[in-house]
Length: 163
Length: 163
DNA sequence: TTATCTGCAAACGATTTGCAGTTAG
DNA sequence: CTAACTGCAAATCGTTTGCAGATAA
Image (cartoon, rainbow over the protein chains, first blue to last red):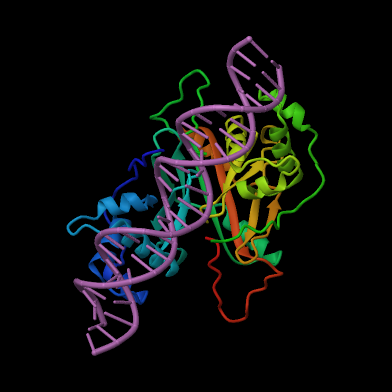
């Protein structure tokens, strides 16, 4: 259906952790494929689909299925987390060291570009949920809109790509 | 994978709109199947999977494929919206008349029960995003935790069902 | 060495599509 | 009557699994 376009902000690795260290810390075997996948996740901000990750890993190429398994392992070890844009395709993003730099995204319904939002006003809610008896709380929050570049046609055209 | 359990709060139709009126307003043909599906969505609070909806419609039964097509039509007409719990299964929920009673959910990672949260602290963010040039804004927000009933085992057992 | 990865082929489950018959307006 | 809707079968697509060979520790 929708070809996922890689509009994600790509910037230099702003993380102190090295792929090797991260894998070691998680008790995961350091393999070529895992290091390559983690590299992709560290270098790209913004959630990536399995397909995007797989295509980003070359020389040596890494099988799609292997990426699925690596992502599964990373997720289980809390190295990454899953994002849903509402199109049924799973996207994953590196999880900066324990809660630091918690953030969310605005996703353009038209061009699917992703902009990070560096704050979160929702964490206070989690406290009140704790009072209600919930534990081990987390949340997912994504915004969807039409970005400036895709300025809305003056008529009320609808963007149904996402959401 | 996970059998979707129907823990959703079921309460009487607290909506003023009748299925017939809603369909008419949307310019959709009023058919037995559509009315039945809309009835299910009106009577159940909390997002339902296509399968749950399909199973809820009986006498006459409604084909799974038909439910998919009806849901598609409803979504296009903004009658319902999609929720993602992070397990790759789409869930849908009735969209109360234009923005009124906007809400979110807490989903138990263990028993998958859904509790509605009747407020939203996020709408102020949308304004600031508008200032940044975004238009036609919406958002998805879900909380995940372990509910009181599923009280966490005193040891640090992990709940990986969702998220 | 040995438990853990990886690749390839095949299975799976959710969702979509084609087509012919049915129905609402 | 006619366009729109529905059911059934088959296709599609993201994701998972089985198994045998390769690899990290």
